[in-house]
Image 1 (cartoon, rainbow, N blue to C red):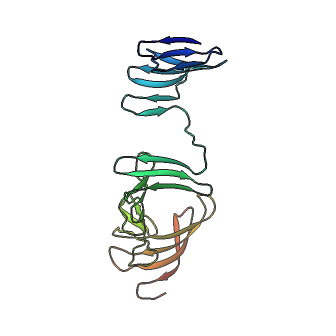
Image 2 (cartoon, helix red, strand yellow):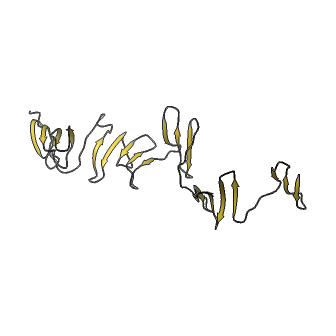
Image 3 (spheres, helix red, strand yellow):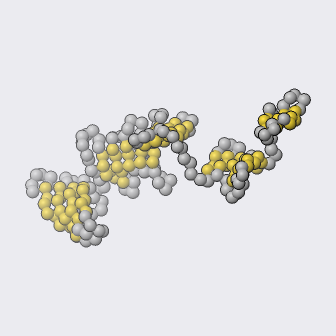
Length: 231
């Protein structure tokens, strides 16, 4: 063996087969290289930015700032049974969980879960299980809110017990705004059928069964049920 020690007994031992043992710390001023027969990986510290670098290609798959923020330039893959990724934001905690038969996205604290696109909130699940689409504070099991007009499209409040389609605009017809069910088959220019509530101002509404042609531009009322029960 070859031994190199300091006064305190810490140092380097190299065995006959070439295996090296360090009894103290190992320090590299710029980088630390790991070689095999054809590849080299480098640990680097430049200005407080730690990185793992592929010495053959120059690619940096992982970098970590002095504040602890990590950047990954490639995919992150967890391969194990019941794989989990935990996220701890301090007051709010949650995880992604991939089981053998299902996938889960949950918070583990009593805070809402937001899902969205284009840096906006599109879907909200609050702590009591209420779901809001376009509504970040749903007060019923399911609320669908048209964020352009602030009108409720679907409201499953306990008053209605089942399903409520609502439009809070002053008037409601089968044009725009509208409230009802639209049935469409075929391409965008095909005919349609509809069941809609029609009213003017904030008066009583009539229930209309009808059809339309040319993607809803020409409406025909096939049957009308008025607010007083006449058909």
